Amino acid sequence: MLTDNELLEQMRSWAQSFGFQQLGVSDIDLSKAELRLAAWIEAGFHGEMDYMHRHGTKRTHPEEVVAKTVRVITVRMDYFPDPSAESWSVLDDEQLGFVSRYALGRDYHKLMRKRLLLLSNKIKEEVSDMGFRVFCDSAPVMEKALAEKSGIGWVGKHSNILNRDHGSYFFLGEIYTDLPLPVSEPISEHCGSCVACIDICPTQAIVEPYTVDARRCISYLTIELYGSIPVEFRSMMGNRIYGCDDCQLVCPWNKFAQATVESDFLPRQGLDSPQLLDLFAWTEQEFLSKLEGSPIRRIGYERWLRNIAVALGNVKNVTPEIISALNSQLNNSSSIVQEHVIWALDQHRK
Image 1 (cartoon, rainbow, N blue to C red):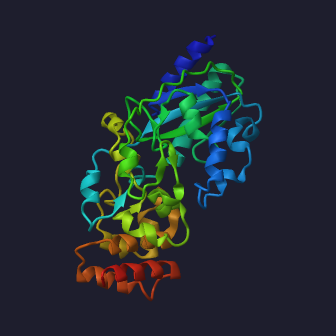
Image 2 (cartoon, rainbow, N blue to C red):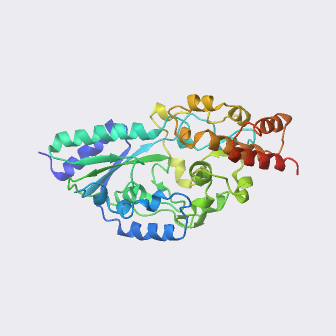
Image 3 (cartoon, helix red, strand yellow):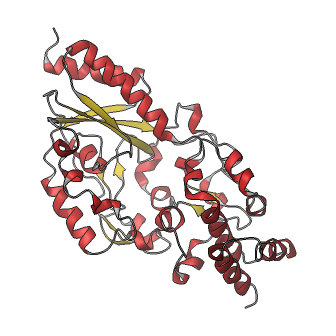
């Protein structure tokens, strides 16, 4: 029979065998995170993400989500896709569309959940009696707060989890369990006086260190926002059509980021440096078929065209092909897409 600490070390070994790069364990006291979350929501920084407060106290009380939970196991899986087109070179080419690097390959949710189940069942084989439930963006879970408590990393000024040896290009997954495991030691914060992420943000969404106003964030605007993108932010979006990595790209800690070992996370459909006009020409059926299994698919065809229309409106050296492509959508698209196409055409009449 393994001791608690021996079991924890064995769990880390098993986690690596299932493709995770790190494992930590935390208790379920999220009282500090609860106060920060309440203040963030009170300020309205969550925008239209009503799910951030819809579940009441469940997000900060794991035992309300899964009865008898006393520990949360958090794992890290690196996703940085190498090889892929260099991010800044794509952002600097206005004819191309930039897709956040986490979304270039297959959707990580199913892969992570499958591996988490394998790990959980392996642990249960060892201890015999263990209740558990796995999560990966699938329930009201404070994954960043739990990752910080479990020693995976610290919350950076851009609000992402940072690790000294691996940067921030990784996914998180959780196992809620009734197993009273020993907890891991949190690590100290190492952002220091650096404000590179705050300075680089195209829309100044990081309103103060560690606080992001989602309503200004390009990731929110291109992925979470259902309706019209506020006019004030459109020109700031450049050619970012799905997400934004700027705050990660300038972070000094990401020089230590490790390339993924998962082929599923490597670029598909040339999304690491796609031509905007090619993407804008996709029919809805092409959108659905080409992006099958991709996290991008969940935003739907309308928001996809909306985002690309804005990017085409931001092209400085406009071509007849761009004008023609935009005009072609005027009578064949929804009112939301038409609104953004008209805006884009207006930019080229100035």
